[in-house]
Image (cartoon, rainbow, N blue to C red):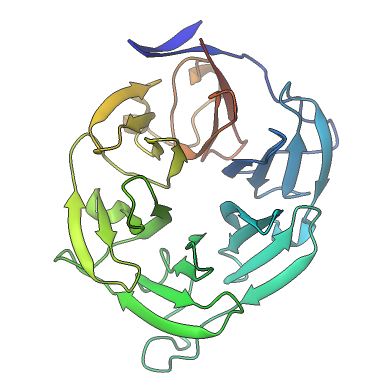
Length: 304
């Protein structure tokens, strides 16, 4: 069974992830791959971080403390070491961790009384790290701000806020640093406005990207190509100039079904997506997808 077309055709690896019997998948929100092509899954069950080898064999799990709140999931390499940056929507925090689960840095609600109080909550959805080490956290389920920190966690600035005009956001769900054209740019999945928005690293609006997407969730780069899960039932690949290469596994009926995203098991088909939420690509250009659905869903696509 295959998906894609033209230069991007993938074989569907049915039943790839061998989830052990003692683990019940929750919403599978995040997925990343490390330098050894080990695949890390972030889900709302426990243990919340599951690690698999490239063949889908379960290696280990940790992170019970993220049960219920597991959301944003980002792997970053720093001075030869890999770290996971995660967001927890239930405890409303961002944590930097070693790949075996040891906390290195925790960021909680910013001390901004005019922005956050008992009624206006900070609910972070994603995180990324710039080449200079600055950390950006999206308050996607809270007040629609983006917060910038130095590498040590010291506060720098915030920008965004609710709206649809340039620089304003409605559910800044995902965030990433785009390095494909030399000058680093900050890409934001402005999901509630059905678009992407591009900023400078200082938070100045540069432009919108609006074509060939519906509800972009997050980003992953493989060379000059940008992969993003579109919550409305497909995974999309853009080229270096943000032009469409292909939609993968598109199902334009899935998100229109009653009860979506929690559809009955018999609705799902191996070569179609319902609610993609996270995506990553390994060193062999194979693609891994995690979907937002109550019993979790993990897919591997093998590049042909």
